[in-house]
Amino acid sequence: MNYKDEELDLNISNQILQNELKNTASDSMTYESFFSQLKLIFVSNDNAYILVPTYIIDYIKTTFYETIQRALINALEKKVSLTFISDIDEIKELVNKEKTTKFIKNETQNKSNNNVKNNLTFENYAIGNFNKMALKAAKEISKEYKDNYNPLFIYSSSGLGKTHLLHAIGNEFVKKNKTCLYVNPDILTRRLVEQLRLKNQEQINKIVDELTSYDCLMFDDVQQYGNKESTLNVLFNVINIMKSNHKQIIFCADKSPNQLGGFEQRFLTRFEGGLTIEINNLELEDVISVLKFKLKENHINVDLW
Image (cartoon, rainbow, N blue to C red; front, top):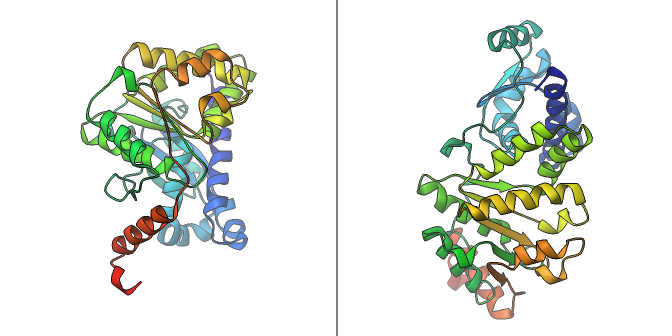
């Protein structure tokens, strides 16, 4: 990979980071005054360096460190140690140490590379009749690999806990020292589109190798890939490799496979090749059950409600 490619990938990561920070900011003033001033300028293995103007660096460190680190992890799809710097000479020193600036990539995967949110588990997942079948399937694949559960395709309307369930599965994999990646459709599409535009097949192959090195891939909001032909071709290759290596694939979408638009029949066949489960809309009984669960979770006496 040449320096131009590395620069492009840093630009993409910076765009994603800024989007994450914009969504995180409590108001537009916070974003414009602080977050918009940040620039990711160097990444080496699991270390990331962000350039910050001198006049706000101390405030950024003490007030927003954890917020920025979370946004950075989401942008890079890997856990990193974050360092703020304000002196351009520090950057030159870092680059000289590495000889060349390294492109942000997930190399040999290990437990530290998992981007699973450890606060989303089976233990704090609200259960009702509406989602009990999906939960049962999720727990089954967390225990052991089952070919007839691969892929697991979960669909429902928005806001019914699909993403929480994905991370809960991921946390079970992590407990067993297995690697698991939550794949954000926006981030993956941006990475692929840029390399496809450059016709950089070598880098596309590296992305495929990176993804398929995990024990489990969790694709959220699959419907967003619809009609993205070039991206889908790469994704289909990833699915086939994972499947042939008996590695778990999980898809989440807002519709069942046969209702998704923009996917060729070969994809629908793959989607339906394992287990497909719907999380239903909540009935009154489910609403009450979820509310009670949340009250208990927040240490509020249910009898008072």
